[in-house]
Length: 302
Ligand SMILES: Nc1ncnc2c1ncn2[C@@H]1O[C@H](COP(=O)(O)OP(=O)(O)OP(=O)(O)O)[C@@H](O)[C@H]1O
Image 1 (spheres, rainbow, N blue to C red):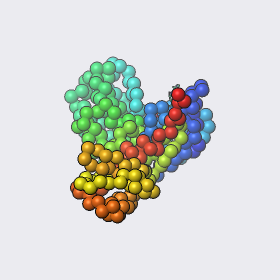
Image 2 (cartoon, rainbow, N blue to C red; image 1 turned 90 degrees about the vertical axis):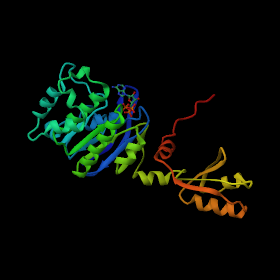
Image 3 (tube, rainbow, N blue to C red; image 1 turned 45 degrees about the horizontal axis):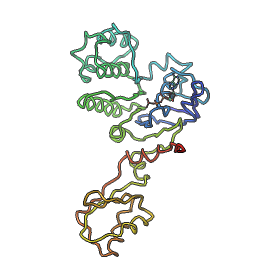
Image 4 (cartoon, rainbow, N blue to C red; image 1 turned 180 degrees about the vertical axis):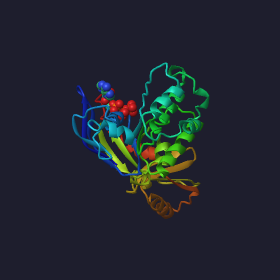
């Protein structure tokens, strides 16, 4: 449904997107994660036809965003990070105006109710809080019943209740078979909502997989921890090939490692005749996988 092939976009000397290729299947929710300046917004702006790529191709439902604008408007809903409307327009006017662009718009009063903006219908855009402006931009992106939706930092600036509400809206869109590209800095959001996650850094895709597979592939896929009364040879645990880090946190010994590291750790403790107490083995998190995959900054020489 979304197809990006060898996309490149520069601004003067800045390479914003170096070489990005990805496909999003119909009905899929694809998360895009990456550090500030990684090229995420530039990529989605190219998909929305707001930027002209230097090279490569982008298609949404087979349409070229630069030449098939009218058809694209009917297919694609876009919520951009920095939504700027005419400062004096009210919420009510903006929704009426947007609805008039579509043959079969959503009943926008329902949408506004779900986004908690009923009280602001007569409020001008410039007088809305940041989170309210954000909620309005989500409503405007969805009012045309798009089959493809781009959400750039969906929940940034939203309070916890509003964030929960927009997450439910994304789940409902997914249940309706809508294809979604979700740019986010929230690992929790990515893990909760996305079928697959692309990690972008330096204008390139560093990893593209399901959240579980990204976590399993990290060097800290599992975290094993325990206490013990006996002396432990920590070096012998560090020597295990499946183990990536060993540290003492107050009275607990914490061992990070690949999937399966816990068994090797227990076996090694057994050989040292060390009895672990309060044993915990937990899955690693997307945070660790993300930090590992985006840790590409070169050291500055002293
Ligand atoms: N209009 C512009 N003119 C010049 N440089 C730009 C412009 N827009 C973006 N850039 C640069 O391109 C690079 C990629 O920016 P982009 O906004 O795509 O990153 P991002 O991944 O969305 O970042 P963030 O997480 O901070 O939103 C950055 O180095 C940025 O400074």
